[in-house]
Image (cartoon, rainbow, N blue to C red; front, side):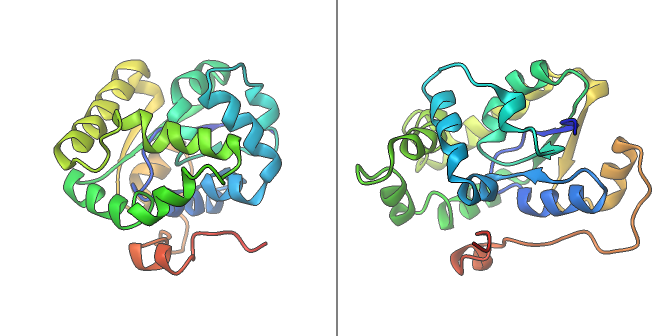
Length: 209
């Protein structure tokens, strides 16, 4: 199994729907935060990555053909070097809508308090601190600042990845740009639409365990 697609988009840019789409197109299994939650043994790797320690990426992702969402997108540059043949999909959306969605779900105060609690296992806490705090310089609740980080990330990905290897995928674009980029036919099924804010709050993003 080879790792063929790296998702560079932040969480809440349609990443769970993109995971489903990639799996329909034959690029599964696709790694996503739900896989971290479903595989507690993976947490040590992500904790190590957050602390700047060496990570054996081929070992972590050996059972996957693609990956999207945090924490994958945090390490898109490293992964693009470890897997030089992999294509990169940068999922994006309108920034103010992204910020609103983020703060109604992942970054909701009660969620952050739980994930960063001293009672949370160290590796999980370090992984989430990297995403929730470090990425946004401790100001993820300041809309203008968070959006500036979001926009800078998009700019950085475009600068770091060869354009021939990169698809900037706007949420809601459907199958055509994705299938054209990946060189596969458009399937005879609707593009997935899952993990809305309402779904997230009901826990629909979590794997069945």
